[in-house]
Structures are given as structure tokens and as C-alpha cells.
Image (cartoon, rainbow, N blue to C red; front, side):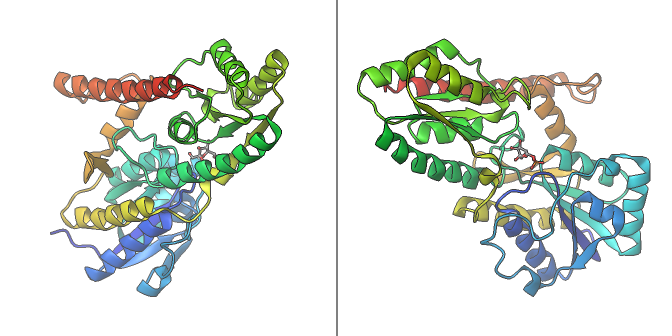
Length: 358
Ligand code: F6P
């Protein structure tokens, strides 16, 4: 049983509904084990600048229902520098922080593994609406984000029906199309566009035309932001204009943007956050570190952070030289199989979205 005087907890990267529930679970579990908890504000920059606050039981009361993060968040390039790391380690030493639990996405986990390598055992908890951490079936914030999109699309469907219009809706997800795909299918979108599958523009336009020819008044298209050719030229908006020009269907456009990050976390996000937060503390006490909490076949488990980061790069086709050097041929084969399974699932669901008639 490892001994800790204090555990630091931080949130980094894009915020996600459920982060507060995870902060609460980490705090309450650690305190129940006689370990003090310190909140690190503004992500890793708080560690560099010593921007800390003690977390006692009452400090995390009534936050399980709140979106966002009470510890605030930031993206901190300085942390990747030797100078930044040195300041962070100094803050830990001066404040008796013996371990860190970092909530966020892949960028957050890179910081956690760096901390572990510098002698501060760290554990990552996957909190991102994108659900794009390949080592886990689920990331905290994803369910709330999908349901927020569902509610927004529901509101737009009514006005589209009233005025016989189409609305193309762009949703967040960075390079992942999961929010768009899952919410698009569930909201009855006529067409969906995701980065994981090549988009057939002509076929999509023909589906809208066919729907109108069949008498469908209101129509919805759900596009992932990652389908855009680049961050500036948002393809979803371009498609909306093309659709109206080629079919005469009056077409509006809505970019949901950061709305998708808001809202009170759903039960699934609160429960997953509570389970992962408490388990992360238990893992530290068992002497585990440099791992990310995962959901695997419905159970809370862990995966080595470096494995998780390399698996993500493999899935996204961004492997770096040397990434696979530390893995056995069997492990590499297993990783490739995991990536193929995830891609096949996305393609299967995508086909389903078009198998449904209009
Ligand atoms: O990673 C979460 C996320 O919301 C992405 O879906 C989105 O592309 C990005 O963050 C937006 O980042 P920012 O909040 O810094 O604009």
C-alpha cells in the first residue's frame, strides 16, 4: 500500500460535463483514506504557477450537477518545456503533492506521463466530449454532449417543419465524428458527415432531393466539424449553400460550437466520473501510476498511458518513428485489431444512417 500525504487534481484541455463529478469523487475518496487533496487551478499552468487551493469535503458539495470545471482549465504549452516541468516539480515539492490525478484528453495524458517520469506518480481520467481516446470505450462528457445536440436538433426540427426548410447543423468533436454520428442517427438526420468515412456529396444532395420529392417538409443534416477541409473553410456551411443552389430547398445553417460542451452532466457522465475518480485514488494506493482510467466491456479498468497515446496515434494514422519499438509483435497485432474494430463500428453505424429511408 503506497503512502501519500497529498494528491493534486487538475483539469486540462477542453472542459467536459462530468469533470466536477470526477473532482468530487477523487476528493471524497482520498479524504476517506486520510489523504489531503489540493486543487490545481487552470490545468498544468496552475502547477507551474503554484495556483492551488485546498479541497475539503465541503468544497466539492453540490458540484456533481454542474458542467464545466470548478478548477478551471487551460492548454499549457509551457508544461512541455524543461523549464515548465522544473517549476511544476518545485510546486509539488514545496506543497507536499505526492501524486497527481489529471482530468482531460490526450494532451492531458502526455503531461501526466511526463510528471510520472519526473517522480510524481500520475493517473489520467478521460474527460472529453469527443470520446476519442481509443483505449477506452467511453470518455466523460460524451453522453451529455450527444444529448445536448439531440435537444438542439429537436428544436431546429420543429421550425424546419413549420417552414419546409432544411437545416445543416455542425457539431464539435475535433477529429472524431462520434457526436455527429450518434446524435445524427438518433435525431433522424437525412444525411450525416463524419471525418472517419469519405463523404459522398452528390449522394447526400440526392437524398435531400428524394426526401423533398416524397413530401418531407423539415429536414436535418448533422456534420462533424472535423469533416471541414481545415479549421477555416467549414465544409458543412459550404454544403448547405450547395444543397440550396442545386435543389432549391431553402437551407439554413447552425454551428452549435461550444453549446455542445455545456450543460449539467447526465447520469451516465456523473456515474462514470464517480467510478473513475474513486478508482483512480485506489489505483494510486495500490502503487499504480502512469495509467489512464478506461471503460472496457462495461468495466472500469486501466491502460498504460503510453499504450493509450500510441493506440490513438495508430487509429488516427499519425504514428511517429519509434512509437511501436517498445511493443511486442503480438501487442502491435492486438492494437491494429482494436483500431480496425473501432473503424468498422463507425462505418457500420454510418451505413445504418443511410440504410434508413427518408
Ligand atoms: O476537445 C474538445 C473540444 O470541444 C473539441 O470538440 C473542439 O474542437 C475543441 O475542444 C475546441 O477547443 P477550444 O475550446 O479551445 O476552442
